[in-house]
Image (spheres, rainbow over the protein chains, first blue to last red):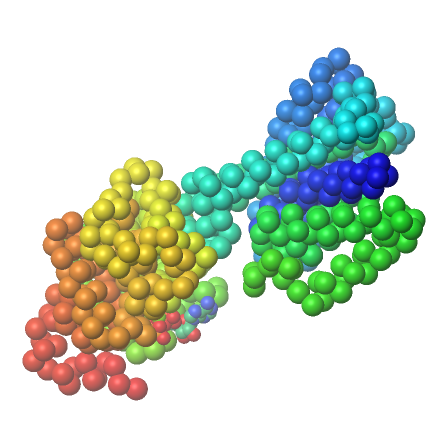
Length: 284
Length: 233
Ligand SMILES: Nc1ncnc2c1ncn2[C@@H]1O[C@H](COP(=O)(O)OP(=O)(O)OP(=O)(O)O)[C@@H](O)[C@H]1O
Ligand SMILES: [Mg+2]
């Protein structure tokens, strides 16, 4: 019984973690259609903001704010200097943002060195409930992931700002003709997506070894979740994260992590083949 | 109100679609531009609203130079646009479409009640997804979305395309009324004589990117040959 409960919690935790790292991708890749190869490095910058803030003795919540704001600003700069010139030129975007990713990674190695950094985990005492002992930081991640997803969803679907963002994405020229400053809205959207990638990095930092390669392990399944669920809709990402994350952790509990990755990735390919626009996706 | 002189406009550098075009509208005037397919009618309105990449010449709106300005700036000066093919936001509700006609305006003057009064069908369908409405209803939505921000000049590109006659008549009457009560100037691109004769005061004919003839609408009533000369293939 307890084992099943633990596996269930682990699966839920992994799903929500995937959702957390996918939210920024949903906005930049899913909604804006930009393949940003530097997304993993934005995540990385978020994680290193924890290192930096803790170096100065700052608390974790401060790192969350710093990580979000700093990476949003980096995203804004990348949009202005690089991406804004090459929207709708997919190959150019991939190449240019790949260049950006190399620059960021090298900059981090220059400032922090290639070795992995130690980060202090907040909420160290384990939580006891239903006769179970579970790391409280993982519970915190689940909570925060739900909260961030909910906030993003509300901003996109329940506010005038979100309506403008979605309007510009649906028809940029017409939105401009209605008086919307499309360039400014693009910038804002890209910055928001980047900031969310940074925030995900902050939150994941205590669980991982913070080193220049850490982004990789999550971005493949992250991209996969967005694709499986349907790139055009945030609800799709929820489905995708559920299937990819849930599948991976449950099979990993029965077999081994490697086997589970192989199975889930192949299944994901099949799903994408059958539903090219994702399970919830309409034609984009 | 709108003064266009020596305008050249192209999609591809060097390949001018509009060639040395001049065109003027006075405040409160209702003008139609007619011409055969591919003569540059859509290109003309796209140029005015700032969607064309390669331009030279002069366009002034209310004495302000707008050639080369961004669409959102031109829109904020008081030019509204109903494109050929409507381009409503299909996945958004009627209400959200109208809201997008307001949110970008610096002065957020809007009058939802007035828009719904002019187009009652939209009031009934406020919460319906725009893409699920009929062509005529979508066209009314596109017009309502354009006028809700209180423009001074309305550009309409073939609003009667694919719409049944009784709705066309309804739209003509509504536009005539709005133009009178809101002192709205209208530039109508049309091939449909029904709408032209019901709505405008003046008709200009475009051929190979130039305005080649301009007549009072009364002449059109008297001399159907004239239209045939500029419209038949
Ligand atoms: N996006 C484009 N790129 C290049 N050329 C274009 C483009 N759009 C239109 N053209 C060309 O510009 C010319 C004028 O087109 P335009 O759309 O202005 O015609 P129109 O008078 O509106 O015709 P219609 O009555 O069919 O709507 C045509 O020869 C067309 O082939
Ligand atoms: Mg046309």
